[in-house]
Image (cartoon, rainbow, N blue to C red; front, top):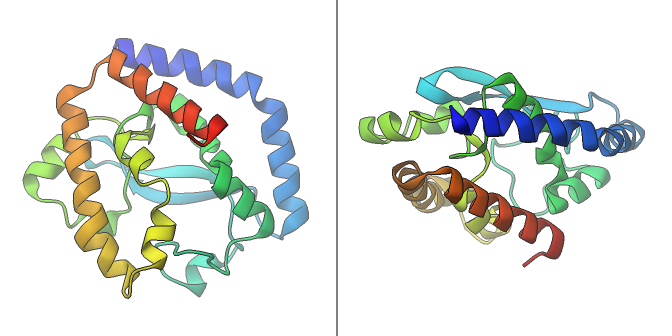
Length: 199
């Protein structure tokens, strides 16, 4: 209950304070390429319930039809504005909407698409999906350059499924075991430090 109250207060304040920034991002996206401001994608949420995740659109509008699920290196589908939004992680700010709606939390295991959740063991599903997915978590901070790592792999999809995803799932399980409001505050502080100072 305390976590949800914290999410609501912070997300509400952040959306109000960041409204001018959201407007600038929306304008830049519309001027840069045709298509919607938001990209919405099916993800698996708490207790396995699917939901539609928000991001500011960083790719051409028909990107899903042009290439694979994962983004690798300098993907040609990424727009000019999209590259900046991805590099600064500003595209993720749209998920404050999902936090307000109750499908996500500020901190929690990153939500996956159904095709990857299908690879979870029953134990992983039971534990990781017992909490709301988050905008940030320890695994996403450690693998914030995931696209660059995958670009160096001979088979990016296989590298993700066999190497990166298992490591992220182990961290997600550890998060669920150890999560408190204090640990969430530490993750948020580290996230802000990385975004502001690239440290």
